[in-house]
Length: 412
Image 1 (cartoon, helix red, strand yellow):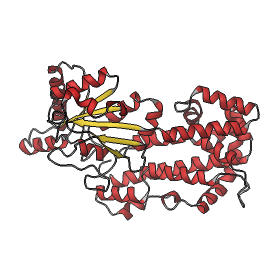
Image 2 (cartoon, helix red, strand yellow; image 1 turned 180 degrees about the vertical axis):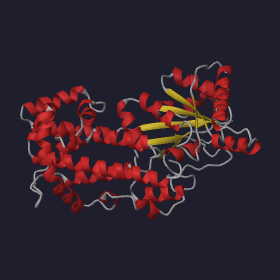
Image 3 (cartoon, helix red, strand yellow; image 1 turned 180 degrees about the horizontal axis):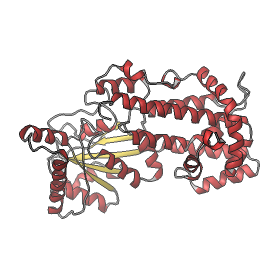
Image 4 (cartoon, helix red, strand yellow; image 1 turned 135 degrees about the vertical axis):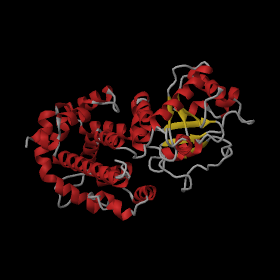
């Protein structure tokens, strides 16, 4: 097996080292100049600054629509929560939201969904609504309707657009209408045809209110992975700024293999930074391993891998309940030790295991990636840490796919 096939493919190399969509060209040049000057401390400081900036990025998503349209259930579904779970937004047949209410993501608290009061209520009029809910704090708006879009939706969308922000129309409760059609007309029932009719009806309503060519995403808050959620996710991913996109991606519920793969690529792009910081920031060698690493950093980010892919106990229990399967049955496909407690001892074992492969990998890294070659040349710590992190990310990603397939095996 060729060295590049064993450790890093050309496509992966492009993803990791050439696609700096979450680090500026100026930062890259500054890091490169510091390395050429032999200022490892300056390079590490700049990398740490970039990692911290990325970690602190906040994404605020506003969810609004008429009373009873399913706003709160949407807020819960996007955060991977059921309506009755701890931390979920309260739901009901009448308007339960009296003021803009933040709901941080349970695993990524820098991502917050805001449940806004229903539009068109006596308290909130369209003309003053955006001022009342403090428009400027949100990155984009989700406008939800459960039956049809009305003048109040369009007026709000036009005002949001006028003020320079994005909005997205979501038609909720699609599953309820499909089920009603199936019961009333079982002989002629065709899901795709009915979905097409729903989409056309929504767009017809919007055209009638002088808002043509607007995309409408059909969703079910009870089974968020169905219908148009994939298209909504892809649209947001394309239209969000790169740093916001990173936060959005990691916070998405693991409802498709495509999302799992995108999370892997997003986390993979950060490995060289973590390796450089962990290897360069530690002054004390690790006994028995023969390298210097900041184990605290590694524990933190390995935990992030586990949580992002939903392999923590809480997420697995929630998935098992949703899939109506024993959690032990879902757990049995997991191989990575990261699904259990991530301790200092475990990290040291993983680093020791990575040591042999890292020797060959570092030679390939220095030879192939000249921009960062001097980081790797600074010591075996970088290569060992990089190899360990990449191996762990591969394992966790593979396990997440197996867990997904196990949970939804009747659907895939």
